[in-house]
Image 1 (cartoon, rainbow, N blue to C red):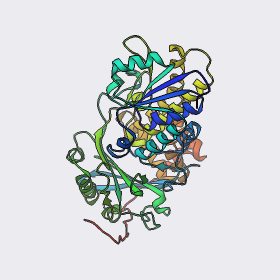
Image 2 (cartoon, helix red, strand yellow):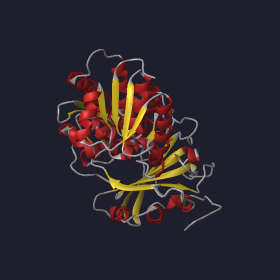
Image 3 (tube, rainbow, N blue to C red):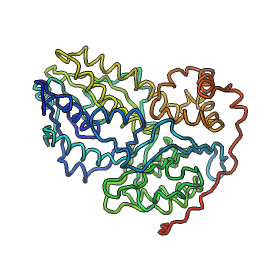
Image 4 (cartoon, one colour):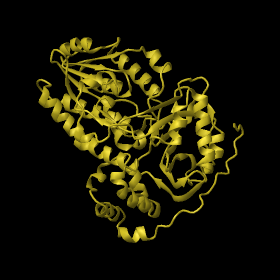
Length: 457
């Protein structure tokens, strides 16, 4: 229960909003969460908002907020296997093939609906208030008038228009990828799963890069099926892949698209993919859409001039290729809770702006740059052309490259190809040019020999 006279309202019951609510409650605030859906509907009537994979630093933020980060409960993920092809159709070159351990942390992929349900239960048990209500701008005005701090965590649409776009941090005016998400059962986590890619087998995520887009598989904890697998695909705008993704209407059509994609482009993983099954009890096990990466100014004002603060995806929307969205939300929430707990006096414009600016410079700027590099943005293509071959040649740098998913700050030192090489040298202790000189195309990738007991076509 609260032990201060200060109150917080959070509009939106996604994983960031509910996690922040628990954090503020633990810090002694009186907290109310507003949601247009009740708890049962949040669990059963919506899709997961993404794979929501967290890495080291974001898991620490979850712990700081006082919520379970699912370590030891979700399938263990200790690294990532990456493969890159270049060319079109079946006329492509198998170029990069490397397997990397995460440096000092494990990744955890958990159904966002499961996180919300458990954290909302915890919030209510500890005395938080949960109000089922559709909050429009007029109602937000009255809520903000009644509370010391009001956060808007309703996602990328709706009330996000209250917060102006930070143009200097938002270089894109349209989505850079069309995205398809599908969670499946049927594929276990035995050592022979993805063993053709890595000695770690199912403990490593599988990432494929192609000219038309990217495909990723990761161990996952689903709300109904439990330990499972999640597929996330990215399609270049205007590509054949994009047309396929946009044709999806349900979990079964999504499953067919994923299988066909592997038959035609990533056949080395096909046996694993053919063993997967749609999670029939969850009609919302898939999601198709696109995100325009956008950074907004966190300080907004209602019609009567009351302050409101953007939180999570309302503040910063990332392309999900580097898994920064969920992580960024937890880190922002933890930073605001810590700053608010120690703050005496009004939460005025200056305090909100300073706290948010610290979040931008300590996380968002680096996370955005890392995302653009992984998206192979033409502006940064020359950096990727150095970093990825070095990762494929030197295991230590491969580990560091995927360590950026947890802590992207090292990319802030890169402003030229020479800077990229300096980072390689710094990490490996070996001259970058000598590492790059050892690079050779992968040739033919090893193919899966996995045999499922229950294959599907």
